[in-house]
Amino acid sequence: MALPTETRKFAAEQTSKLLRRLAFQINRGLKSRDAAAIHDLRVSIRRFTQALVVFKPCYRGKEMRKIRQRLKRIMIPAGEVRNHDIALKLISKSPRGDASELRSKLQGRRKESERLLMSLLKRWTERRSSQKWRAELEAALARPEQPAGSMAVEELARETLCRMAKDFFVRGNAAANPKAAPEELHRFRIAAKKFRYSLELLTPLYGATLMRWLERIKGVQTLLGDINDYETVRQMVAPYKGGAEVVAWLKKRERKSMSEFRQYWSEEFGDRDRARSCLDYLRHPIARAKAPKKPMARTAAASAASQAPQAVA
View 1: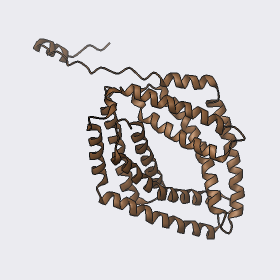
View 2: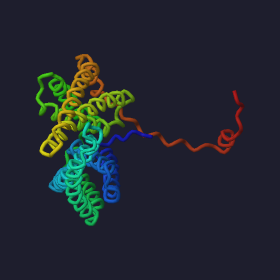
View 3: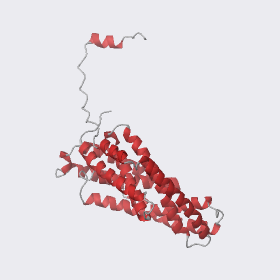
View 4: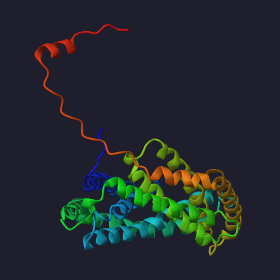
């Protein structure tokens, strides 16, 4: 398959695919409402939003800002639902797995957040937002004043990913410091997530090596996600009866995950040569492929010869 080379065309292909995925996950969330559906909905929103950020030179104007604001409003209750799902899951594994009163409180709070989320998702579908947003994206790409036409997609990828990679390593080194504040780990977790989604978005412009970098970054995300979950759930359960024992258990797990993160970062990203290697790789997207030439018309004899059975070696 030929590599897409025009910036607008590439942006249109990627955002269209992600918008279809977003619409699918919104409809799925409305039907199932379970933890997996809410998780996948949040991921699809983040990926689509990051596409609008990466391809901002193509997607400008107040309509694009409105789209991102609408998605942010959906993410808030979706995040609350997800946090309660994580809390309920962790409590079931804790020494207080039988804390029925605590579970009941959390389940009630989840239902409140779920009602708000379902209301927003239903409104999104009733307004035919998928079709409207698709039309607005196409209109934004068609505006003649957009500056992206003169920027090759490889240049856009190089500038975006190199900037994000530098930020990733700086924030990661700071977060891996034993004296790092929880806020530093949180900010790095968000930066790592955006970096990964941007890499996935621009994967067609790079080779197989990019997949190895993505796997390493996923490892960072997993550990940081665990740390964030423990911290979030600690704050959620602390005010409730029976929460103290769960909080103590979560603190132990959080300390263990932080130790694992520091070791993982040191092994996979702590070496300066590793950072230079990553940046050097991202500076060189694959050369744009030329469209294959239309084959010349063949004579009847040549056509017949090509269809004749060939000897097996």
